[in-house]
Image (cartoon, rainbow, N blue to C red):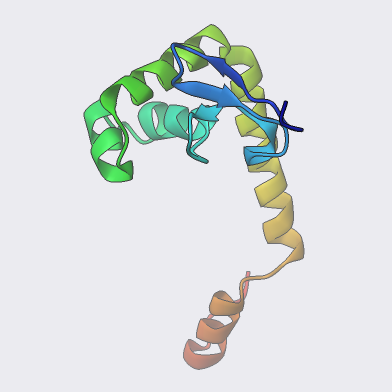
Length: 111
């Protein structure tokens, strides 16, 4: 038995493995999380076939990820909010070096 057994669901399309992708549900064999597929579809308006083509995935993988998302929407939406809050906090404490460079070159405000 492996030290980090994966929980496989949705006919083998979705895996949850401790220590891989933060232990979050993901496309089997990939590090693409279900929550990423949900964001691409819901927030960015990408169609399932566009996501599949863009990331080299099977259409069944995308539909399984979306089905998993809709079955676990509350928890995955909370994970998305948590990740967004973490990114916002990181931006506030770690200024963009590129923004600083442009500010120096073009005399832009740094805020």
